[in-house]
Image 1 (tube, helix red, strand yellow):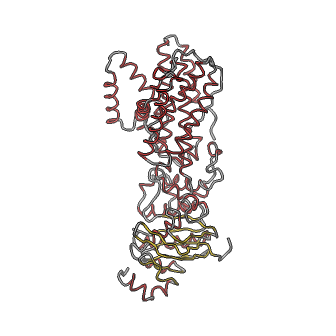
Image 2: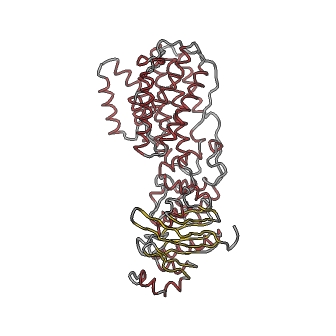
Image 3: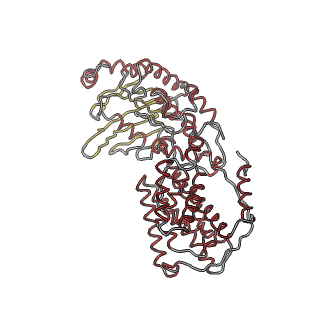
Length: 253
Length: 298
């Protein structure tokens, strides 16, 4: 992949569920190394956009390119294998197994043995990668705890660990700080930013918390009723009258 | 990587090998022990599917019965080599399992169970009404197979490290596993095939002991009994269902030798177990050890 090259291209994507048009002709470009946020009121189509990009839904019209390849219509596992990982808005981990095993199973999907017959007798060595992630997110002391026993904040971190363990080049974060206290949100934002820099990650995130969006993003795209109504640097978005009217005007967080 | 045969497993196998030599071992008890072990093995293969991956098969009788018929057809023609019986049942059950698992794993939950049941009922009907296989009488009066010496390969569950963890992950949260890059259907198909083939191999041993193969072996009620064995032993414990299978066989045999209406008593015992020992005979002990999946430990 070329440096500063275009990593993700969403080209004129529309998505309808029956008569409901969730997305209408949405285009978005994300370059390598960028942090881009998608904001918009509830029901604006943000999660649908993520689901189309990650392969959960097909697009009714338009296409998505990742690193030059068309990925619309590919299965989530195929899209993930290209280096595009996603975290979920509602924590989505493996509840009944330990924190360590959660991250391990994610890391193993990238081991050369994964999906091959040799995996029946060979254990891939992912210990180092797993522990590195647990330490980075302060979960090393909880490694043997069952995931469902973690606090909400810890589960949010585990969620990110799972996605990072698959060694993505582009990470999609769906409201990573959902349900966190303001203090936790600040820490999480700083941590995400640090991880992205250290790993050379490109980030695309959905966020409700304006302090997070303004603090972390290089660029912000605004969705409203399934259409992109604005895009630009955070300061410009903050003062864009159309955006204020549609979104910031109604909600003042 | 563990040794091919753990000391504890070696001890168990040695004890089993010496079993026929013990003076108090009558033919009756020997056959009972054989059945207990055979159905214990079937229950264990089924547990791989249910307890580990969360896929409930209601059609394992078909795998078992097809294995039994494969062996019976050979024995009927005077081919008494046990290894040939095993080889044929491997092929027959393998092909059938490929078909079933391909279609069944595209669906989840109750639909998976129903698809396995429907396929199995088709197999039952075919054998029940095909005169070449003896129709409802099945294939009777078979000679005993000759047992050639072979090697015993022990494959402890802990060797299946990667696959085992992925299966647990699929059971825990199938959708998330897909978003981590796992082709979930492929893993499900794989485990379905393994479980089916192991069950089929157990089935291939049955005609040698019973001297017959009848359509009853393919009946859905047999699939139900397999499920009960797994439940008694403890879901997801692998070793538990061996005990569950043995327990069920011995219970059924013992009770039925006293009363005609033995199913009522067996049923009551099962209800009792489900109510008061819901995790099965071994479940409550092993659940922590096997399911806790302590990181780092072998």
